[in-house]
Length: 275
Ligand SMILES: C[S@@+](CC[C@H](N)C(=O)[O-])C[C@H]1O[C@@H](n2cnc3c(N)ncnc32)[C@H](O)[C@@H]1O
View 1: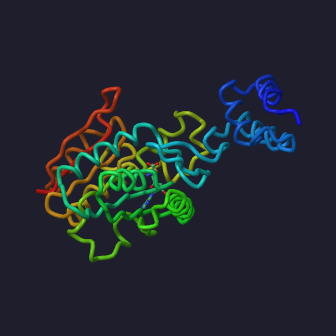
View 2 (view 1 turned 60 degrees about the vertical axis):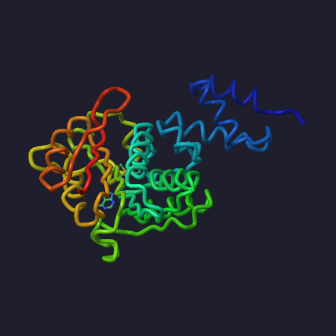
View 3 (view 1 turned 30 degrees about the horizontal axis):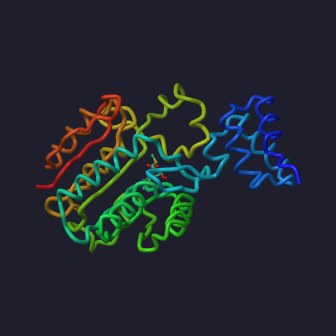
């Protein structure tokens, strides 16, 4: 039976799909060149041409070597968040405990917590990782990703940031990793329209203290010291104009705070340590 894939790729490119994306869609939906998959390939291409992000159309995307399942219940993990994981691992190496307790606040697809858990296992460290999200839909996706990657020991809790966490964790968390919403509602309107496909709750935060989209960052920074173990660290991604406010909030909360620059030289990650 003839392999339909080359023809399908040509058809998709002719309909306006970029050549590389056309190849990925065909590989995803016409596995092995299955001729019965033609309708599914064209339906996926239509979604893409209608503006849906490629990651949702394919249904999965890599993050630090993990192939994460994704759908519109969760944010598409960004490359800059891979850098946040790097900073988190540096903090955990500094803290150097045999069984660290790690919180991934606003876990979405589970990207940060699952990457940390995987990379710690590879270093022979068995961490207790807890993913936290206010969205039940996001938690469903995160739990499925944990199962997919054999990370049954990672647990998930529905909570408004720290509010619903087990009180026994207070003062015992070695690392709080967070990529909270930090885009202002008005700011969102001027950004890439593709963001409209992602959950608004994953992106948009209220303004706080005169800083656009800063309310969730401020809430997490203010609450973190009560949950961190001595020497523990908060590693938090924020907007590229929120660095000074994030540093000031962390210092006001009694933490030793630093900003970490991304590959483009913008301060996007706060590292704040409890003494
Ligand atoms: C920017 S997304 C980050 C997702 C994932 N950690 C990542 O980096 O790809 C923010 C996440 O925070 C969650 N969230 C928003 N408000 C929350 C709250 N008050 N408490 C807990 N989670 C919240 C959203 O549902 C969303 O999954």
